[in-house]
Amino acid sequence: MTSRGAAEVVGELGRLLLGAPVPLSIRCWDGSEAVVEGAPTLVVRHRRALRRLVYAPGELGLARAYVSGDLDVAGDLYAALGSPDELPSRPELHVDRRALARLVGPLLRLGVLGLPLAPPPEEARLRGIRHSLRRDRSAISHHYDVGNDFYRLLLGPSLVYSCAYFTEPTASLEQAQKAKLDLVCRKLGLQSGMRLLDVGCGWGSLALHAAAGYGVSVIAVTISAAQAELARRRIADAGLTERVEVRLQDYREVVDGPFDAISSIGMAEHVGLAQLPSYAARLYALLPPGGRLLNHAIARGPAAGPDRPDPRSFLTRYVFPDGELQPLATHVRVLEEAGFEVCDVEALRRHYALTCRVWVSNLERRWDEAVRLSSPGRARVWRLYLAGSALAFERHRVGVNQVLAVKPGAPGQVRLPLRRPDWSHPAVREGHEPAAAQPEDVAEDQ
Image (tube, rainbow, N blue to C red; front, top):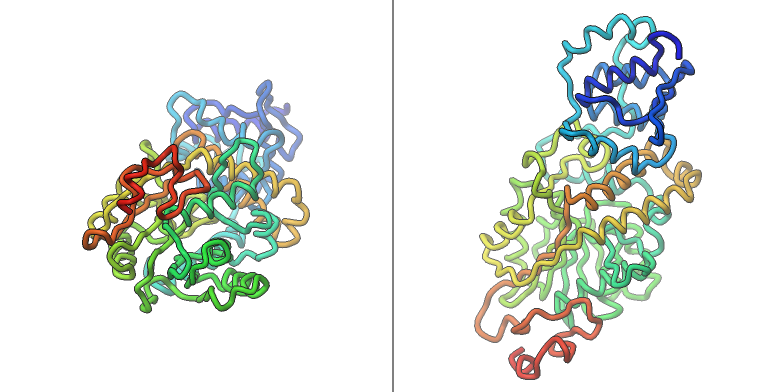
């Protein structure tokens, strides 16, 4: 390695960011290397990567360098993303700019310093009042209007963009997603003739499953134009247009209740802490006494940071602008304060870790096609986001929970069993609990 070559400078910069030596090998554009035996390799393809770190020292600078392609990882991406967890203090990525002063000379010699670079085009820059109708539409469009063909490649034929439910470890993604859709329908107690509101309906997979398998009528709402267009086409192809209506509409604009049941799958994360009480109150108002809500949402783990996400984080700038994760306790409290009775909570954290790993595998296996359908930067965003998410779920930094809540009413209107059913059992229906899980006298009480 040449004296004060780029790899040595990157190592020093990394030490400032992490508070400890970089636990990765480093290979730079000038041919210099710093090897850590057995570790994945951080590949710095261009001096622009360091310039981005100088102007945004921390996660945002690293994200911009990776998305632009100036920074990459050779070897196991999961091992590379998980390596900072092995550091004694598990520090945040930040540094006092004054601490960079001693690197000014080497950075100048490497040609790193210069005018700031424009962020990659995949970076979100929203305008307007946070969580207003207009800004929320822009935030949702940034994430979901990437391209329906891209999402089909990533998610598979089910087009379900929330955690699957693996009833068997060897289940395929399609089997696990079908199991999750059926799990939601069973928890909601859907029966023929009921009316379901699906909030944040995605590409219509739950609406299709509920209408075809349970005979319900569905109002499915999304504020993603791309999702609505494909959902309508899928429903027409299935011959279910008389049972399912897809609307390009915010849940706050739905006024034609009541509905017998409401599903909200992977949507509450977009609402924001300040809006959660009005979200819960709105859904409560759209249900009759005895109506059920299934709220399925990612939650911050017990060691998570502040309520609001860091505006300079990778997830906020590139993945979920204005997205906010709250602890499970917050979701339960808000629902109860709106008047709901929380009847069942199920944690699916490990299921989401498995799901994310399958999605990463889908993306990597068809990488060239994914790039063609989106952009090199967008494909890199999704690979980094999903691999990082898999690790976050595996290491309990985030969780995901299904909360079943009921709008209380007169005796007899809340038709739930006295004992918690085995929701995973396919025989669970209203009045048809598995014999091993439900005594006969309980069935009479429903």
